[in-house]
Image (tube, rainbow, N blue to C red; front, side):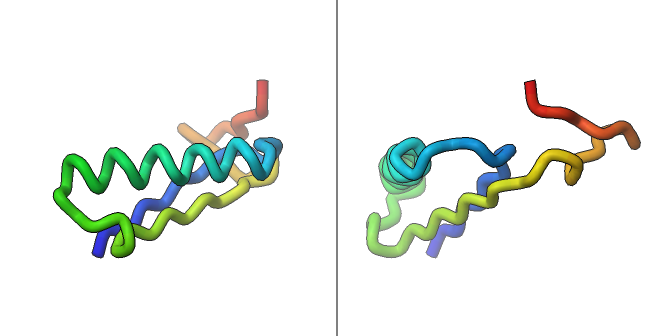
Length: 61
């Protein structure tokens, strides 16, 4: 049962997240030979100020 976690800065519309989840599900199903019903996509909206690569805060562009 594949689980896919996607972290994005917040700001995507519900429609964008639905499309992303559907497309990811299609690819995982095709490549991993997993039934779509077994694939779970988690999209985490990260507020600005919660991502610190190399110890520096990353801001949205």
